[in-house]
Length: 444
Ligand code: NAD
Image (tube, rainbow, N blue to C red; front, top):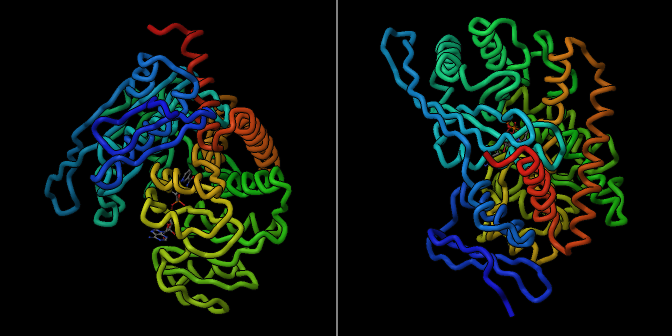
């Protein structure tokens, strides 16, 4: 008999637990895919149900501790004044200062920022770095702004939120369309107001208190996660075939490091298109080609796939979605042919797709563990800033490797013990750690 344990009354799915205590999602909505916040909360509730958390605790962890919305008026280069919306959501700080990226994108909205903030709480807990979770964003298409306008916008954002961020309070980092230059501006603007504070942001340029190894960290973590899962399954990364969707920071480093580990990258895709070579793609040559032409489309020595999306259906051992959120959906999950999916992107799989893939025994390595290499090295950067000391790249990589292996061993064990997916296991581990910290500190 099935028991209903979580129900999203406003939207489309409910979580039920069957006789074996396996939680399954039932799709009950005709209304199309849920938004990012609903999806995150559904994953959270599925684990919370297995842990038998009380409804009050569920509400506590579903409710961000602070949501800030600010109007950002700046003078454009042509003398006009434009006003943008900026957001910072601080989800939970039970385990340490809030931590999370800052995204510049026309689609940034409060729901998305809330979802990503809560994902950060669970991600920092799974990988066990002493932070909570936060996220921020500005609703803007940065391609329409000059560098000088972007600088003014970033500095104005700091002017508006400087009281709620800080090295011991909330530490932003790069995310979609922000990079080390934006972090340098944040560090500078915050330091004008509060004194020299390199620890207020991570992802800074290496020449300005950034950490060696940060740029490759997320992709390196994805590669280590892939190797460890294959090992636990009694397989080897050597010779494993891999398709990588997205050929930016996460995709290129994932592909390069997996190839160095002995995997065969047979397909890659970016927004320009997708290419395949069953004998293996030379990743460094593909990176050089994409840099010089703006994309992987037309890469010599590989055949073109029908379109960029076709990469999802390659018959490979491992699929690494490392582009956008929400790409694996209930409409295409049945066509996925990979045996293992390692989530480089944040939220690439909708809950409906997650349930379909679980039903097809396709193992999914969830984003909150698989792409946690970035925040792990951000933590190392912050530690170096606070200590006013720098580590070598080997030290950083070595410490990252140990964190990723430890994280994997923990979620794998819980997954076997509780007979749940790696995603649910990761949420169980994270909720347990955050919950314990919250109880020890006291609820008030
Ligand atoms: P990026 O901007 O460097 O690269 C994104 C890539 O996706 C580009 O190659 C782009 O062409 C490609 N892309 C866009 N639309 C596509 C489509 N329809 N089909 C195929 N490819 C497409 O971004 P990134 O930093 O590599 O981040 C990628 C994902 O990883 C995001 O979801 C991000 O939130 C997540 N992530 C990044 C980090 C990090 O440290 N950079 C850490 C954790 C999670």
